[in-house]
Length: 101
Image 1: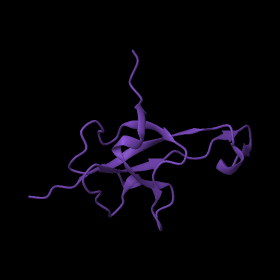
Image 2: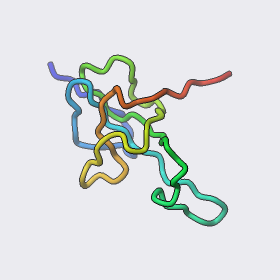
Image 3: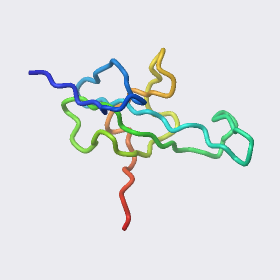
């Protein structure tokens, strides 16, 4: 039986299933400074980005759905028609955020 591992949240609903060691990440929104929005293209000093894993392929070993991850700004492939979603290899994930008590 082919089970799709996907985040069950209406905010992250995407009708795609990644294959093998690929995963789909919802990139975090552009940050707001005061009352100004700074477009990603103007944040040249920023070399890394964060996002939420919303779907994983069968061969993914380290990533879990719903976890917040850290990856390079050029990692992954934009998914046409789904703004903010990236298809990437699990190896493109640099780190996971962990809860600190």
